[in-house]
Image 1 (cartoon, rainbow, N blue to C red):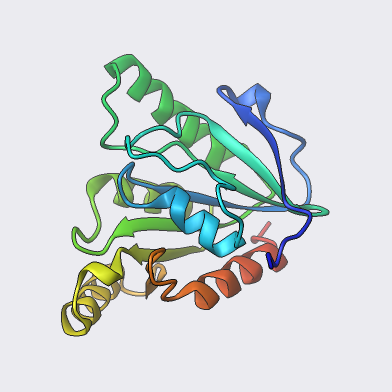
Image 2: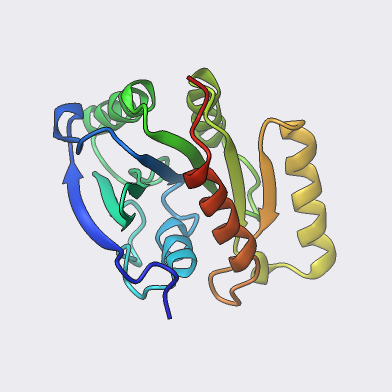
Length: 198
C-alpha cells in the first residue's frame, strides 16, 4: 500500500507563470533522462505509473507537480542531457529549471537521480549548483545499483560522497530490487517537514 494514498497529479507546466500556488512544501526530483528518475519516483511513492516511465529517455519534458498530501508536493523536473531535442528546447529547459529554483519559496529539498555506473555528470553538477545557490538541501540517489556487485556499488557511493564533500547526502538505490527504498522515502519526508532557511 502506498504511503501516500491521497497522492495525485496536479498539473504540468511549461512556463514559470503556469506553476501552482507557491505554498506549503515541495521536493523536486531531477536527473539525467536515462538515470531512472520516473522509476525511482514510483518506488518511493509506492504507486505504479505514478510518474510515467518510458523506454525512450527524455519523455519528461514539462515540470510536473504532484500532490502527496495536504500542503506537500513532489515535483518531477524535465530529464536532461540525453533527449534528442532541438537546441532551442534545451535552452528553454535550462531557463525553466533555473527559474524554478529561483522563485519557488516552497522548495525544501532536491532528490538528484544519477546512474551509479556513470557517477555524476556536468548536468548533475549544474543542478547541485542551482540548489546550492538557493540553500536547498540535496540527496543523491545512485540508481541501478542492481547492475553492479556489492563492492563496486559501495565504491561508487564512496566516490560520489568524496566528490560532494558534504554538500549532499548520497545512497545506493535500485528500482528493480527496491534497494534503498525506505531510506529514500525517509529523506523525502525529512525534506517535506523541514522548511528551507528564509
